[in-house]
Length: 542
Length: 33
Image (cartoon, rainbow over all chains, first blue to last red; front, side, top):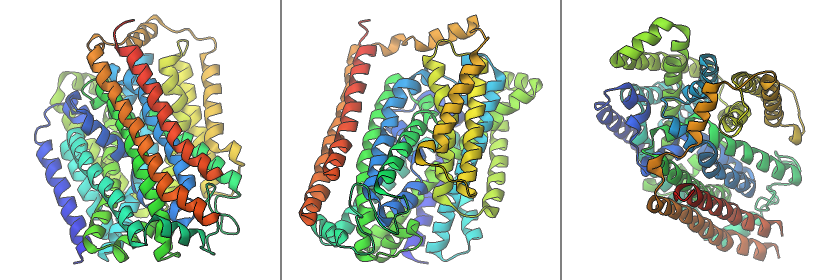
């Protein structure tokens, strides 16, 4: 067994042990779903970032930087990361006040509507389910590659690991292991990419070699690759793509269930706000390393194919073994941490958002007996896990494509509805339902034709833009002729009122300091970019 | 030149967000409303 395989299997064992240990303390549905709403800032931040970053980032996006678009990736990343602070201010903190067990349940309370909860639950199962399949594929492909075992065997190992501890430990386990994994992949990203750059002769030498690379012209330019191989099109289009997808991912970070559900676990509102600042700071720092390091791999070898394997190749062939093991374990951790969150969300939605909508008897039973509800949630989780296993076994691999597909789906369906539910006083139940369903359907169909068919759309008519427009139009049509009920008005009023315990000047000042941490991270990464990229680049290009 | 603009952008976006976030937090939670 190679050091890489051993390292990965040991890390799997550690996560399982932690998950099982934490899981022994799960007693109630509130424990299982939202960790009893007692998570501190560190765990919420860890879980936010770990659920967000997956093989899509460490394989797909590092591959994009390696292919010839490091700066385009960074333009996308900084917009994307903004979604944390904007999201917690516009939606996350209100969701947290609702103190529900799932995000679709918030929609039910807000609009007094079980069908809206069920519809949102179905979008969670379909959208997050697709994303889970993509991430599971990425992790399994990687494991089969480094361990030299079949895809099927790797898939089974990966699936058993994340399903077992999600099943046993629920959200408390996911929070703790997510945070451990967050530490592992932050270390992997920063240390591995720093080492690569230094080993290649330092930033100045790397920049000089990369700007001279004949096969990848303009690799380090702001717009990235030009010429025949430019997969993102001409310069203007590449930058437009980064801006549009950056805003899409920011919306995902702001409203998607696998991100905002973390706020439901936070101890209080200030914890949510602080986590939003820290998560954004973590992303803007990490992405500088991933993008510039991913590009630097070209100095060692310029033709890793597929490009998704660039980081993995460097870990196995360029880095010293110990660092390579950390890097591979980090990539695995990023994938696994998203998988656990995704699986738990799907399980929670099936048992909490959809099953009760289908059966009044079940609803009554769960209201009365917490343990029965917990048992049912666990069984549904296992059943959902088996379905995911079967689909992943059959589905063709397309890690980056499917990941981006799922992201656009939530931006188009949940984006306007979630923000409107808080900030639009006149929003009605029918408006919300029509908007959600229309946005989801339009993006799903258009995006499927673009990714898996022959449909070609100009960048300004990206499926997600059409989806958002359709969503808002459907919401407007749905609102017409409908009245906001007294119950809805009252509920919204209770939502926008800041809870008394959060109104403390000392705590507000402390939360404000987290904004300074973000500011400091911005200045620090700016200096880093200037010294390791900008100055050498301007020198090299004259 | 585009590269200089990019670095400025990468610093200014999070700085602006941090500033706006700080302002909203102080406005909403100082309890003076």
